[in-house]
Amino acid sequence: MSDQLYDVIIVGAGPAGSYAACELVPAGCRVAVLEQKEAPGLDVCCTGIISPECFDSFGIGEEVVLARANSAGFFSPSGKHLRLQTERVQACIVDRPSFDRAIAARALSRGASYLFSCRVTDITIKKDKTEVQVLRNSTREILTARAVILASGFKPGLSRKLGLGEIKRFAIGAQAEVEARDIDEVEIYLGQQIAPGFFAWLVPTSPDKALAGLLAPSHARSHLEKFLLSPFCRGRIIRQRTKISQKAIPLGVLPRTCGNRLLVIGDAAGQVKPTTGGGIYFGHLGAKIACGVLKEALRADELTAARLSTYQGQWKAKMGREISLGCRARQVYARLSDRQIEGVFKMLDSGGIAEALLNSPDFSFDWHSRLILAGLKKSLTYPLQKARHLFPGEANS
Image 1 (cartoon, one colour):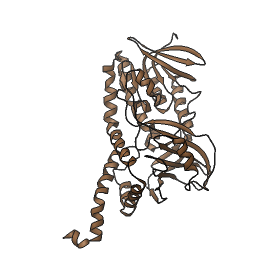
Image 2: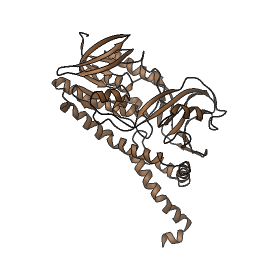
Image 3: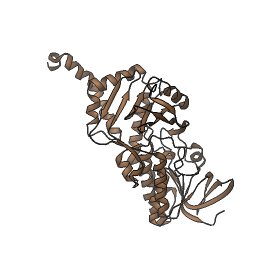
């Protein structure tokens, strides 16, 4: 057992975990970040698309930004194209490996310790400390801390073992880097034959490279392989540059995200947008809230579940409605047939609904609930508007 007693051990060196380290160290906390991989940012399965506000909140340099986007193309199952564009930049496309490394470097510069190739096998919560059992370079060790933050991504086994419950519903993301041409903006492909219940994407990262990926409830790799051979990609994808990486993405929240001397943030807590599978921004918010609660609890030396439960209340007040409504919207979309998806495209295009939503105050890259509700309202009134156009005399009588 190590003689070092940390204030906080963070399990996971992704954006949420490293951001938490950045927040805690300046408050005088002794922090160790444990990462199973050999370095931050290895084998990530993520497009790296985040809002400018999200990027700015991490406080890292522009060198990790590959591009900024104010437009995207959406394709229906039959290939119908709907292009959406705004005057203002809506998204930053960051190089995820570099992004993760930059946040970790910031935490290291502030005084955090990082232990790589360090797999957590068990966590024991005791009255006066936590013991984290790890396997590091084929050697078993026990590290101790006053508190633990789980930022380990979606790993149901660990949360279940700690009595926090588990997130039972999830999707699988699959992605590969490809050599490509004629991909000038983010492209989103919808259709139950392409990505059942979800969508596929082509995201340009340079003039001749792109990320190709999709989400699916299962068999994501085979769906992606099929997509890369489809007419949408034929002649545009020259070759696959990397192997297909995969990642499980939670669809719902963990029943409990705190316990004695324990907090859970990021994907591990279910702090993910169910509509897109994006977790960087919500994970950042969760980390920020968790660190605020934990710093006060450490100062008071009161690390009980009751004291730390304010974290769960605060993050759910901030994000709970977004996640709940996003889950419902995704479930509705998953039940649509390709024919119904075509109908939605037609309505959005011919009804001017897409442009109206895009330019409305309800539009936000990070917050989708107001946009979902506004879209539902407009879709319900669309038939009436169409009737007024066809029968102006009767509509006004």
